[in-house]
Image (cartoon, rainbow, N blue to C red; front, top):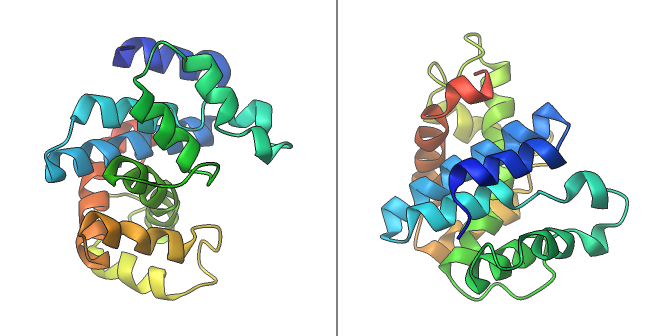
Length: 181
């Protein structure tokens, strides 16, 4: 399996948009936090989270290829379950297990949390409280691209919304320096 350093090098070679790189780092952090919480393989889940949008720059105008191109790029470097989760996150294949549901639900939650941090007076994750994230979650106009229904699929992991938001916020605080927040 590809290691974290090699995975990040792939991100740097294939993703020029710094906000997308930060999103991928945030998803990695949340996936690692979920894996820890659920007793899963933290390294595998984290690397899948880091690489899940590897093809986005190439497939942005062809969503039907998003995920498939990433899997082509990573064939032989990630186990089949990670490739399946990458294909499941945009909905190209059915979500069948906790790995798939984790990547699917944490993809939009990172955008919600980053947007909430940017609106907070401290403009940081350290100053952001769960209460503020929950309030922003209720406002459908705030970070409208952060699909609330998709976030709520955290229930497929046995997590309530508040627990999932808190776990995600804590995980992202751990990489706040890389996110510039």
